[in-house]
Length: 188
Image (cartoon, rainbow, N blue to C red; front, side):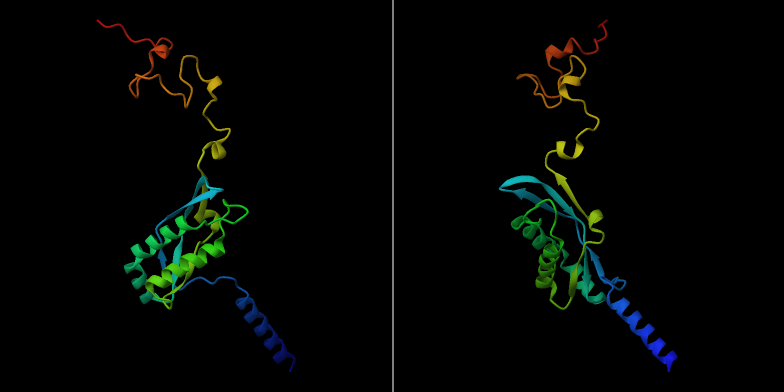
């Protein structure tokens, strides 16, 4: 009797461990790689940057994946329109993507286009690897890297971001800085 009880408990504990597993892997052949999605990030009407999103669409079975692939352009079009019409970030932190809400929106787009029974959900994988925020101004992400500050630039070279004088063709050094540049070889 004790052996039977012990076997029953171990079976019960094993079953709850499987049920507690948050996301099981989809069956082979039931996922479709989605094209990259670029979503603008703004706050108070000011563009802050972009979020680059990589995802997979999990289908209910292998034949549903064929239908999804046939309608992939339409799904991507709906997703692009969606992320440009509504923010993808959290209300208090627009640079941090609201994964659950984004998943619900993109899944709803796919279900509307392909059919409710053919689509299970979007999968973003490891979020830190598949969803990346890129600020609009590089100074936010590249502060302290290689390029010198304008006051640290070599004498006679224009500072980064400084405009060339009017009348100077693009790609040519303005006359004022030519004297400090490497001298030209003499013409023979």
